[in-house]
Image (cartoon, rainbow, N blue to C red; front, side, top):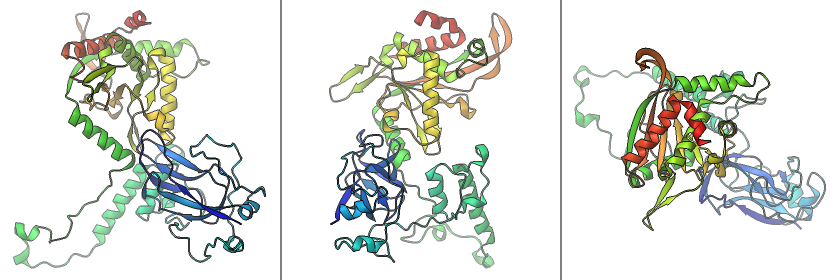
Length: 460
């Protein structure tokens, strides 16, 4: 006889207390295997597929896509037992649970092929009934507005969600990404265009000449009516970023210093490194990887900046390992993946890890561990075509190095005016962990390594 078990949103680690449902991977009536992913959720750290520890038939789902659930809230119910097991893909009963709730951990049993079970097949056992005409309580209709049959050039489930929210047919869009991939910016542009068309087509009522100029009182919104404008919930990654930046501003007495540096020799050294191995060489070393390697050398000289402040104990905690974060802009917002133990890596190893994490960020596959534990952050905002900025420290770290664009400028080189590749470097630091002399020394060392890359040899 089948037994109905409730699967709750599990603890996803890293202190996370809630998650937003991005996409259901199963429907009511589907047969699921033990540890089969059943829902994709977005936490404040990353996108995560949640596997179900039970095998059987899905009888109900709780929460629509876009809903935010706390840890411990019901996700779905599953009918397990001999009847459900007999209906599984391999014909075996699946009454036990694995006890595992994280992707990549479990019994290793192959996921069952998705299969819809007739409601009467379940109700025939006498204990569970799923109505044929209406979904079970808490379930979500399987229809996806704005999408018909066939593939759509969209990777991000958030892009699909945005299109559904605005009743936008993705098949009417031409993607601006690689191979016609539809990006979030394409959907947002289409939404703005649709809104403009609606406003342009709206009828304009005649207004008497005497009423053509309104008084301030008449322009005020009526009582109980909200002012016009779109409301965007601060949750998920965007909410986490907002909370962290606000906390940084509240708690950290930060200061910023900056300097212009001649990066001509650094660019020449990079070109020599990437050309030395010929076509058979590995991946190219990026400017970001070289700057990251310079940061680890500078932090070895100025360890005060690789630290954090314990407010409760009123202590500065100086950290041994450098877990180097780097800011990355994605469709989901700003994220900061972390290169672990960067102090033990050379430029090539750092570059390879940056490449791996960047690809994971682009595809929404960063794990919470990939985004946690940073001790110092490198922010290359030069990719946006700007020269300078005053970065906000990534709490609870003590400093962030900002890098502007590298651009040709007139520069005095060896006593003569020349055109050189110039970059602006800015360091925002927690004034509790060090004074301006230490911060200035760190920044000056970074600038010297940018101008004379051979200085790095002394740090190897």
